[in-house]
Image (cartoon, rainbow, N blue to C red; front, side):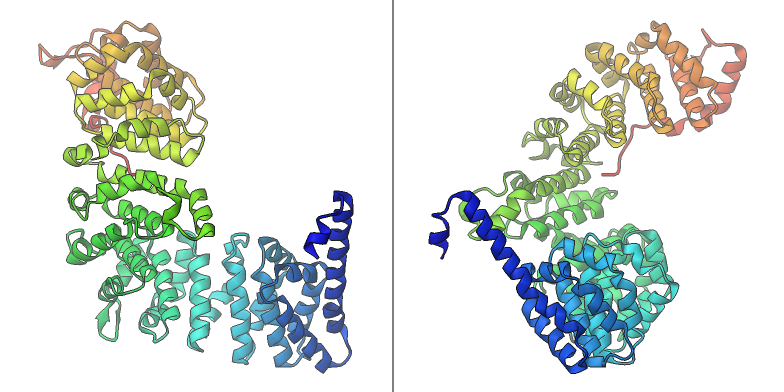
Length: 588
């Protein structure tokens, strides 16, 4: 009795708990013992009883794994002398064990369960095949399972493609395996070359919702950042209807949210790959509004995160889509709510849900920053709108101090985009918000992404002569120290190139260039990089000199410090320096 147990001193209570654990383990042993019975019928009944015992019981699953049930189940599953019914039941129990904890899955992987299940797919019996696929699906969707295990044998993918026609269950499980195991261009290429598009396309019109949904998720991961797949999808038709039209139907408001969102992701990938124009009605009137809807506070946290991140990706490089998004359904106001979530405990009645959302609230903020960065990447008017007026600069500057790397990167990234072609006041506000101390902190960050984005921010701040001169008049000493710090440090070519480009921008100022001309140390560094073995660094250094010796009043270049040979080299390189004239516009 619980109340009786609580009366004991803690050592006695611990002993009772230990005895209880031993009792549970002992009671589990008979399930394993029955797997070794000489009577096949008793073995079958033992597996069936084990199946019933582990359903929804993680403790029982762990006990059976500890007692060695997995190797015996795999042995029975692989024996040709085992009846098909027994082999099927073994696959079902193994699948149930895989639905427990991640440690359960690790134990199954250690017993080489995947090769055994893949071998089972060669069976002529459909029920056994479905049980093996169901178990494989459960294992592959676990985060502890390496996706590459699916691709070790070249014949596996082609066999899975062939099994797609067997039943709606094989279709559902195989599509789910593909969508979880497609993690990059190499996997996309393998699946594409094995006919994934042709074999899966017709499943989008299946009578089974689960099949349609898993097929859709397959296309979502296949098309992501993959022009080859996207260009193929746009021309594929099912029952006389092109896939983009099918995707548009799937993102209508009356469809389930996960279907709307996944369809929008497919269309977004196809748009970014150039397979669908950015001004196509299916993007402007369907995909974009759908993604904005996903940002509403009525949606679940995961849906809001995925909606904002997908929308950020869709509009990232297109000014017109950025403008449309900024005025659609009060998007800017909705994004402000991302930083207040959850606003009150009473808003979420499910305690487990509240606990989950509190742990993942940072994902909302991160998604909002990505979308802010995309919205304000190109258009000054959008950049000013609740982004600036809602105090975003102060918020973003504070995020650059976060211990969370993702928040730090996205904070500085968003500031970099805001500074691009911005007015002087915005640039001054950014510098004031960051502070010199924080700027140096970011420039010495161990993460190269933070460093590159900070250099990009400096380069965007130091653009157009009046802005360059104004900023260098107030922060020149600190910026020159930062530049020296980077050029003297052990950094890669890209970091050094970006730093030299910052110097080139400073050299373009009317009064700011004096900070370089009067700094022998910096001049020596520029001279060093002019003769560097890397062409990019050479060109960037030459561009610094080109800007330094430009005499605005005379309207010509006059070499004050350089030898005639260098001056001639500059003239040859002038045509190639346009790349360094413009400020950086990043990809958020």
